[in-house]
Amino acid sequence: MIEHVVTSGTFSLDGGTWEVDNNVWIVGDDTEVVVIDAAHDATAILDVVAGRRIKAVLCTHAHDDHINAAVLLGAPVRLHPADDVLWRRHYGDGSPYLPLEDGETIAVGGVELEVSHTPGHSPGAVCLYAADQGVVFTGDTLFKGGPGATGRSFSSFATIMESIETRLLTLPPETVVLTGHGEATTIGAEAPHLAEWLARGH
Image (cartoon, rainbow, N blue to C red; front, top):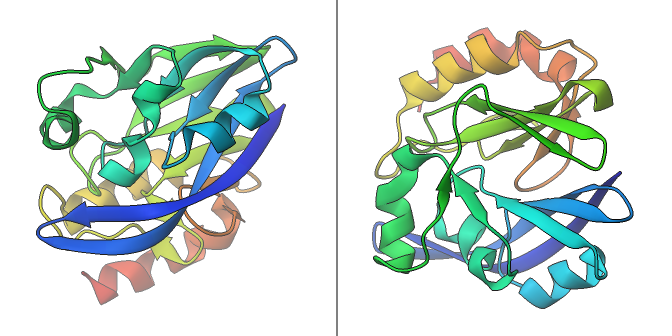
């Protein structure tokens, strides 16, 4: 079971602040779930959870708009430690998280999510691949129409392109890409544009 709620708020980095709408994904069954990217509005997220046990809050990365409701859900928060610098910018030394590891599998409600470290948008960005469901949760690494932004601190265009090419575009083409913002797409729809993205640069 994959459920979805869109929450709204702001993203701040490098002295700028932007209004954003975030996709929050809830994955599990009738008794337990994980929440992917707990953004902005804990009440809206908990309304969808509807009393089920939250096994963990999984963060695809630690930009503030993806983590600012994470500690409010009463569950362990998981984050790749390479994003610790971004986490601390928002939470300081409080609100500890548990590390996500590349290749780790997280099981919840009959779904297995494989953690794939895909740096570039941020140093600790990860994607979560549910092979049996034919779905990958890409956070801000890959969107409908191309790679996530890399023009800000702690980001790298060359790194995100390597992550996309080696970790995402190698998945089956029918794999549905569920993103951190905006519409879903598929690996097959995005893969033909790789050369165009590389040529465009960022």
